[in-house]
Amino acid sequence: MDFKFRRGVGETERLSVVASVYLRCFKATQRFILPRDHSPLLARAVENPEKCRLLYYFGEYRFVLNGVNTVQTWGSHRHDSFASPSSQSDWPIKLQNEFAFAMAEAEMFMSKEGNPHRVLPYMIPSDMDKTLPLPPVPPMPSEGLVWALTKGYPWMPAILCNPDKVTGACGETQVMVSLAWSYPTSRWLVYYFGHRSFANHRTRGTIRPWGSEHHDELSMGCIESCLVPDDRFASFDVAMTEALDFQSHGDVARLPGFAGPNEL
Image (cartoon, rainbow, N blue to C red; front, side, top):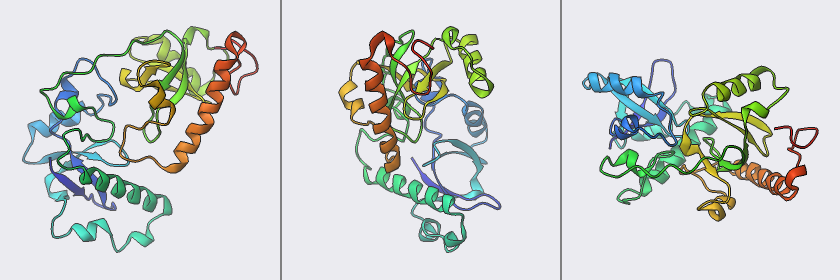
C-alpha cells in the first residue's frame, strides 16, 4: 500500500492513498459501505497501470483517477512541503480546515501501521484482504427505527421509511421518495433525527436494525473513519435525544418536524 500526495493543475495539495489494491470491493456481490461509483475508474487504472493511479482521499472519502506524474510518494524528499504548504495561509478557511483534518486522519491511520485490523475510513477488512469472507448482511426491517451511516458522522439514529407512506413530499425529497419506490432493493429512504432531513442510502452496509448487535456501542457514538469532527458528536447527541423521545411515545409518536403522528 503506497501513500501519496496528489497535485493537479491549478489545485492545492490534497492527501490521498493509492487504492488499487481494493479489487474485492468492486467484485463483491454484496456491497457494504462504499458504493460502486468508482468501478469505471478502477477499470481504467487496471488497463493503464503505467499511466494511472486510483487514489482515495482522506477527509473526502472519494476515489479519483490521476496520472502517475502528478502523484508524490508519502515520505519523499518533498513530504514536508506538501504536508505544510507555504501557500496554505492564502487558502480559504474551509479548505485549510479540510486539509488539516485530512492530514490528521492520515497520520492517525499511519500510526496504526502493522496493526492487522487497520482499515481505511469506510472500508471493511474484506475490502483490504481478498482472502477474508464478506460479513453477513444484517436483516433489513421494512420500516421503523434504524441506525444509518453518513460519511463524516457517527452512526446516527434514523427512521427507515416506507416510500408508499410518505405524503406531501416535494422537490428533492420527492425525488428521493420516487427512487426508493422504484428501486426497493437498492435505494432505501431514511429520515435522520437531529438533522430532520431525508436521505437515500445505496448500500446495505450503511443501515443497521435498531436494537440489534452492537446497539449499545452505536448508542455511544460509533464511527467508521479515523476521526470525526467534534461538532458531529454534538449533532449525534441531539439526534439521540429526539430518537429516544420518539421511541417512548409508541404509536402516537410524532417525528420532529412533522405536524402529527403516523405521517410516515
